[in-house]
Image 1 (cartoon, rainbow, N blue to C red):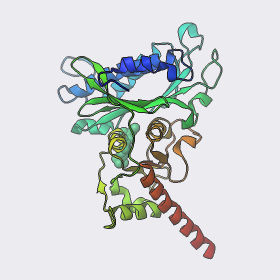
Image 2: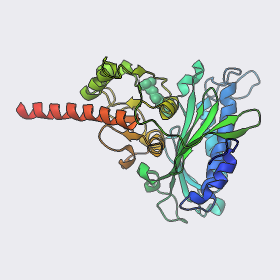
Image 3: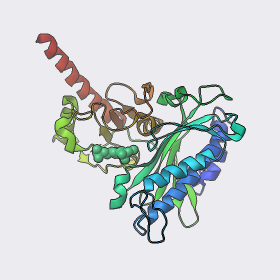
Length: 345
Ligand code: AHM
Ligand code: MG
């Protein structure tokens, strides 16, 4: 039974023994994410007060160089993760190439790889809407003592040892999993401590909210269009409610707590959708599954997809199991119909 006053620091230590490779390193890694998130949270909170969202390279009235918040968040997470001799490589949405970390005395002894989106949905900063950090953590597959390789960065999501997000919303929250369920912690900014506010999060098996950028409707595949129409039809418990923030972390956070389905399909304009497999879809899929939900690309389990590129995109359907399965059935049916028509012609 969790105490409601338990802090994130206490929780990490108490649950360390649950990790398969419990030697304290993953705990230290999670601690460094916890710390960087506090610094980023502080800057996000100041975004409306100081003109920190200005262009990169511009100077403010104090003559200091201004950084966009996503650049700031990227540097903050990279510096914090690099300084602790735990991580051997980082993939970030902000960096074209992976970052290789040789660690103390250049001996390549560090074991973990982190894939992250340091500030997702950052276009929402200027309009005071929730943004987030998303991260997935893997053990390297190449031998310790040798330089990190591309293979370490291109592992399927089912190899994640931990994953989570930080939501910079009305409050700052860390929600993460190490494969033993999902827990959420809320930051008390006055004292800089995170408290366990959402123990053992379970996504309801069925929800009543569908979440998709319907502006793209005409470009969506037939099956997705049919499913959206199904959500809107007046029948049984429908029409469902529509909610779409446009910040994946915010939309997923709501889905985890209230149930529903979140979709970013492929379209005639974007053949693999928009979201990134490595540092957006896989961490979120791990969280959803750990909370009893489901995440697929319409056909395949997200976490079973073998990545080919570090910035690969993939269609995404995630949330309440029953809703995601329903969407999949519409997608499959439309594909089957299309195949049948092809054969007839
Ligand atoms: P970003 O990584 O450039 O911020 O884009 C990712 C974001 C997600 O947070 C969000 O779900 C999606 O883009 C919204 O895209 P759209 O504006 O096409 O609906
Ligand atoms: Mg992103």
